[in-house]
Each structure stands twice: as C-alpha cells, then as structure tokens.
Amino acid sequence: MKHINIRVTGKVQGVSFRETTKAIADQMGVRGIVKNEKDGTLYLEAEGDDASLEVFEEWCNEGPDRAKIETVEVTPGELKGYRNFEIIKK
Image (cartoon, rainbow, N blue to C red; front, side):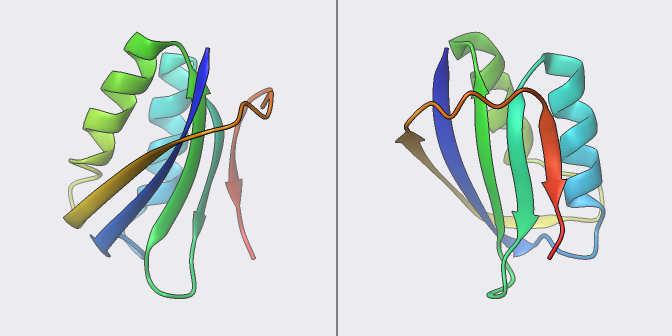
C-alpha cells in the first residue's frame, strides 16, 4: 500500500473531473480525495497498491472527455489511511 499526491493542470475544472475520478477510484479500490484548487488545478491524494495506483495515474493523464490535460505531477506522500474516495467541495 502506498500514497501519492497528484496535481493536474489544464482545463480540469467544470468538466466533471472530480465526479469521474471518484467513479474510477471506486471501481479500482483506490482511496483518497480529489478537490478543485483556487488556481484552477485539481489536487488528488490516492492510496492503494502499486498496480492500482499506476493505472489510476494513467487515467489522470487522460481524464474525462471534456478535460484538456496539460500536466500531471505525481509525488509520493505519507499514508493517511483513507477508507474511501471522497470529493472535497469548498
């Protein structure tokens, strides 16, 4: 089990990215959070096994149909023990 932080830039807000990400994460057994940031990026924390996180990361590089991904930045992080995948709305 490992933890990664992901920041996605481009046209990633207002395109159902968070909702689609949650559905994909739930299907794959990935746990964590996703939220829109004030600077227009999307921030995710994801926990799971190596294989699931690899596929999840690949999906983040594609996103939903209406998204236009510019960059995906992935950094390792500390395990937080998420129990499910949640959309954080502020």
